Length: 446
Ligand code: NCD
Ligand code: ZN
Ligand code: ZN
Ligand code: ZN
Image (cartoon, rainbow, N blue to C red; front, side, top):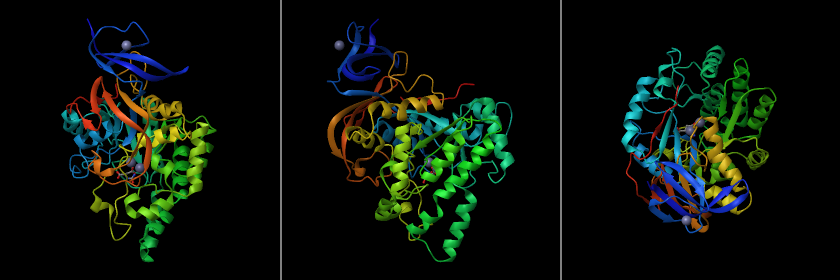
C-alpha cells in the first residue's frame, strides 16, 4: 500500500544539524524520515530545500467564539493559527460562557468540532465540583487556568486555602495549572487611586500593572503550591522582578515552568506609549531592562515556552478615551513565527531554541504525547518556511478578525510557506486550502 504523501527535499533540523531528507506521511502521522528508500506514495510534493519545522504549539490562545464571536471565532482564530504555522492551540477559558465545568466545556467542544483548521485543546478554570477526577477533566480539559488579576470561574482567589486545595487536586491528577500572575488587590487599589486622581492614561496603567504586582502573585502561588508540588505554569512572564521571584522558587523542588510572549520580548513600554491602547495588554509592555532580562533568561534556558497570548478584540474596544475602558490584548498568532524566524536570522535565537520553545516544551508540559516533534510516529503537524524571504507584517491581511498589531509594518525575514495539520495541507502560500474540521480536538486522556 502506498503512503498518503511524501514531501521531497525538505531541510530538517536533526541532532547533527541541518540535513536534507524526505518525509513520508501516512494516516496523519509521520511514517518515515529518510534520505533514500522512501515508500511509494499517492501524492508527492517537492519542498525545494525549504526548512520544515514541527508545527508550533501555542499554549496561550483566546479563540473566543460563542458570545464573543464578534472578536474572533473558531473559524477565524484557527485560520490565523494555520497562517502562522501554529498547528495546535490551547484555548483559554475566559469566554462567555466561561469554560468552567463539564457542561460548558462540552458545549464549547461541540461548537468547535467542525469549524477548526488546527488542533485545539481547551483549558478550564478550576471546577467547583470536586468529584475524583472532576467531570471537566473526564470531558477532556487539558489544563486548569487561574487568573489572579480578577475572579474568573468558581475559585475564590482571595483565599489561600482554596488555592492550595486546588493545587493539591491538580497534583493528584498531574494536570498543569497555568497562572496569570498579577495581584488583584494591588491592581484594584492602584486603579481606584488613579481614578480618584483623575489619571486615565497609559502611564497610569503601567504604574498600576507594575512588576511588583507580578512578583507578588508569583511569590504567593509558589508558596501555596509548595505543599503539594503541583505543576505550575506561569503565563506571559514580563519582568525582572517576576523572574527573580520565579528563580527563587525554583531553588526548591517545585515543578514550575514559564512562558514569555513575543511582544514582551520584542517591545517595550516605549512602544506602548507610541501605539497607545492598541498595544495595551496584560501584563503591559515593560522597560528595556525587563526585556533584556527576559532575553538573558531565555538564553540561559530558564524560560520554557514562547506563546502568543493571542487576545483579539475589536478595534473599537481597543480604542477608548480612558485607558481603564480599553480592552487589553494583542493578536499574535500570525506574527509569532515570522518575528521569531527574524530573530533566528539575526542570530539572537537558534533554530533549536525556537523548536524547543514553540513545539517541544509546550508538548511536554501539557502532555501532548504525539505532537511537537519531527520524528517518525508523531502527528504530521508541520510548518514549511523559507528562511530567506523578507516581507512586512501586514495586519490588514490577517485571517484573525483583529486586524491590527503593534508589529504593523515591521520588516521580517523568514516566511511561512505551508502548514500541514494532521497530514493535511491546511495553509498554502497565503491561502487556507483545507476544510474546517481537519483540526482535531485534543483531549486530556484520563
Ligand atoms: C487577555 C484577554 O483579552 O483575554 N488579555 C490580555 O491582555 N492578555 C487575558 C489575559 O491573557 O490575561
Ligand atoms: Zn525523494
Ligand atoms: Zn493573562
Ligand atoms: Zn491570555
